[in-house]
Image (tube, rainbow, N blue to C red; front, side, top):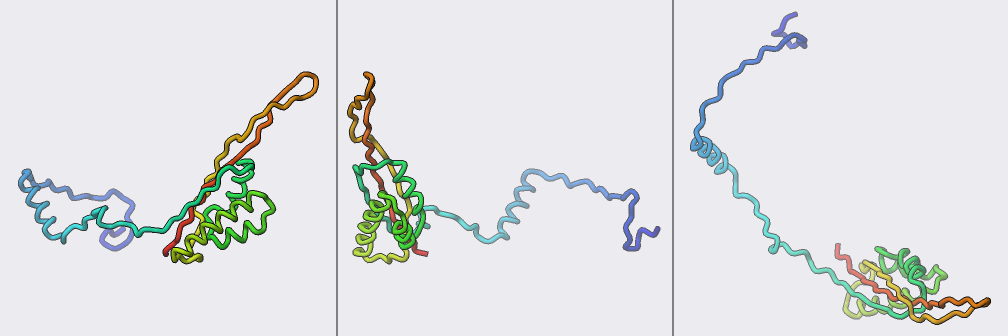
Length: 166
């Protein structure tokens, strides 16, 4: 088999090894400085110089609704992170009582945003937070000398709308 031709060779390969020059610390430093001077100015990042554009947010709260927080959160889950127009269409098709309350609050916030000069097509539902508590506890007297408590749930919600400026 001829090694000098461009055919594959499966035998041992000869490697030429040469000794490295002895560098002092000053020689290494001069070499690095020479390479650094060839490179143009570095790109610097100043975090306070590049601020994100301010996005418009509006929030509203509705409190003390006589409704379960679990049921209200199920309705809220349907419209989280959706455009406001799609959210209103989804709520119009729901037959839950919580959908009516969320729809009322969305309408109020949308009217407020439009009065301030924002485009309703760019507004979307950023977050809906639902919380709950107990409005009333009263004794429930049952038969055979037993008793319990009646708990009336109440809940509140907070909606944050945001304008997307793409």
